[in-house]
Length: 472
Image (cartoon, rainbow, N blue to C red; front, side, top):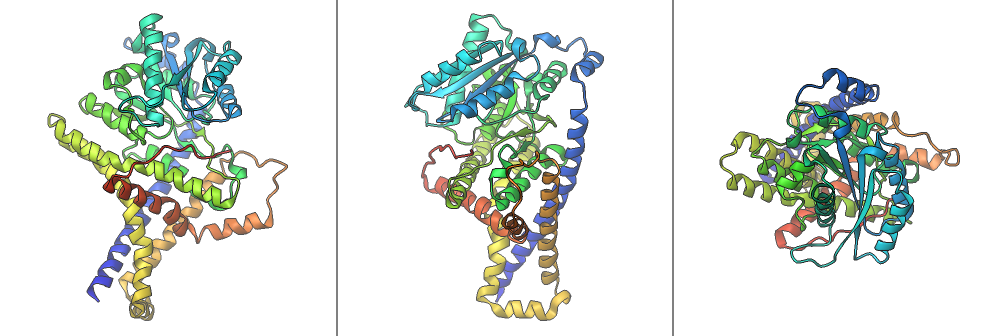
C-alpha cells in the first residue's frame, strides 16, 4: 500500500502547487489587464518628449525591421497582416517589411513579388527573400528562414544603404499576427529611451481572438487559459518572462549574438538563451502591455481541429530541448553569475516538467490510484474532511476549476464583438458549460500528452518536422 499512497501524495502536492500557481496567475492576469488599459491611454510621443535624456535616440531615427516568415500561407492572410502593419505608427517613414518566403513552397517567389508590388507605397521599404531548401546544417523551420532573411536585410540596409545598426529594431512575427494599433508607437519610445536597449527583448501578450467565433467552446476555454498565463507571466514580478511567438530585439543584439540557429524548432526561447550568454547574462525581457491578436488552430472537421491543436502544442513543447542547451551554456560560461543563470534555467525547466509529467501525475496519477486500489478511495470518502489528503485534493481541483472560470470571464470581457451572422446556439452554450469540469481533461490531452511526446522523442532521438497548422 505504500507505493499507491506515495503516488497519491505526490499528485496531491502537485495539485496544491498548481492551485496556488493558478491563484497567483489570476492575480497577475488582473494586474496585466489594468496595465493594458493604462498603456492604451498613453501618448508615447508626448511621454518621450518629457522623458528623453541625452542618451536617448532621436524619435525619427528609430527604424523597425519586421520579418514575416511564412510557408504555404494563404495570400489573403498575408494581405491582412500587411494591412495591419501599414496602419502602424510612421510605417511609411520608419518600417521595413521583409516577407521571408521558402523556396520549398511552389510559387513563393511570385507571391512575394505580388505583395511587394501591391504594398510598395505603404512602407519605407518592403522586400522579400526566398530561403533556399536543403542548406547544410539546416532543417526546414521558421528559425532557419528568419535567420536567412535577417542576414539579408542587414546587408541591404546597413552595409549597402548606410542605415545605423544601433538605431534598428527587429521584430519577428507569425504570418497571422495582428498587432495592437499602438504597438510600434510604444516600441519606438521604449527603444529610444532605454539605456540598455541592446540588451533587451520586448514582448507583448497574445490573445487568440482573430477567429475566436469560428472555433469550438472547449478550444476557446483552452485558449483563454493559455492567453491568461501568457499575460500573467508578463505582469507578475515574481515570474521570469520569456519571448513567445512574435517578439522584438535590436539588430545590434541579433547580429552580435549570431542570429537564429537554423536547426531549432522552438526559436523564441533558444534565441533568448543564446543572446543571454552572448551578452554575459545582461539580457532581459521587457513587457509591452499592448496585446496582439492571433488565429487559434482550426480544421475542416472536429478531429482535424483536435489534431492541429495537438500538433501545435507538440511543436511548442520541443522547447524541452532548451533545458539541455541552457545547462551546456551555463557550463560553457562559468564567468556568468550562477544564481542569475540558474533562475533562468529553473524557469525553462519548471514549465516543461510541470506541463508534462507533473500534470499527468496530478490528473491521471490520482485517478489511477483509486482505480487499482478502490479501498483507498473508500477510506478517503469515509474519513471525508478528517483526511488531509481528501481535503487537499478537493480544494485544489475546486480552486483550479474556479480560476479556469475566472480566466474564461477575463477573456470574454476583452473579446471582439460576436458577428451578427454567428448567433450563439444552445449547443454552443452547452459545450461552454461542460468545458469547465473538463478543464483538467482538456489540458491533459492538449498540453501534457504532447509535451511528454516531445520529450520522449528528444530522448530517443526522433526528430520533429516543422508543420504549419491550419488557423483559418
